[in-house]
Image (tube, rainbow, N blue to C red; front, side, top):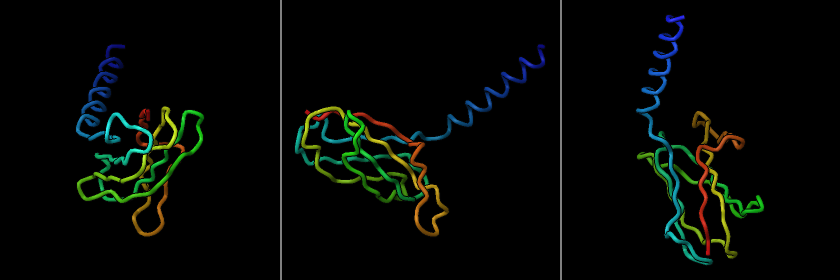
Length: 122
């Protein structure tokens, strides 16, 4: 029994230390607070190798408001200039990175976003 506990503890330590070195992807919206009709920039970092990401924006009724693809730069970051939604409310951003080998059209895992982010438009 003690052996099993020690093995589980070592496994947990290895997993946590392996994940500690990874940068978690982020996304943000500027300016904050955001107002109806504002010019906004949606950006993210921590996406690793330069590939594309696809970004979906949904309203509080789960209706798609906007979607776009953009390239991740060599520093692992990306940004996209846009217009804030024309209706006040809470919006959700979902970021899906390209999982392809980089030799053609992208392969996105649309059922597994890398990042989810909520922002409010007033």
